[in-house]
Length: 41
Length: 242
Image (cartoon, rainbow over all chains, first blue to last red):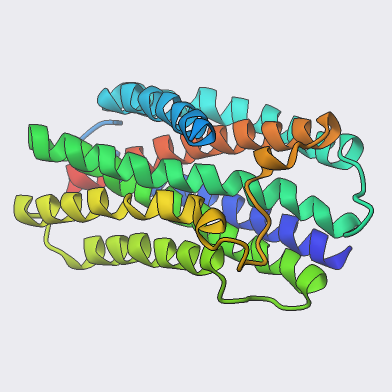
């Protein structure tokens, strides 16, 4: 059972972690773009 | 041969759909929201099917259910690497940096899924084989595939953003896909000298196992689509600010 939980937890953590990292990076870049007057993408 | 053509056909349809989407960067980026909603809905269905529909296999017990997360990662990783080649071909043909961004974004998401294959596989293998890892042809070739595209990403972070560097990376990304059929047919090539089970379609799975597996394929493909679209947007914003 612990192996099963580990496999699913690691997969969920990796996919969610990457999705949130992209989200944060996107926000940072959009903020920087707005501050420099570039407007949103 | 018939089996190979069937898999190639499904792969071709998925690649054609993603290529159509990626051809227009704004369209691909806009599609992220739809992809995200679809991915969440399908992941919920898939997870429900893994818990309530998939049976507890007699020989392996509950640990066999790792199969439903491990196997769907593989075609999605392959899709990522094929899309890296599509981006590479697009760049070499059009000399448009947009196709290069398609290649980098696909490679990154592909490597993520390939990493998950290499992590979930040993977690299943330990209780079933009593080993985390064996140097069998399928496992080793998958590791080699991971190294090929991890090296691609490493190369991209080190190289300058010149057209020469992009062209070199494009050729590397295209050549890397030659490893995919080798990984896919590794179990057949090993001619019985492998511990890894054969491709699942050949095992004649009952509907109760096939439904969660197919849902896993579709759900993970949508997760790939969402992450790819988001990564493409990040790459575009970075290019605009550099």
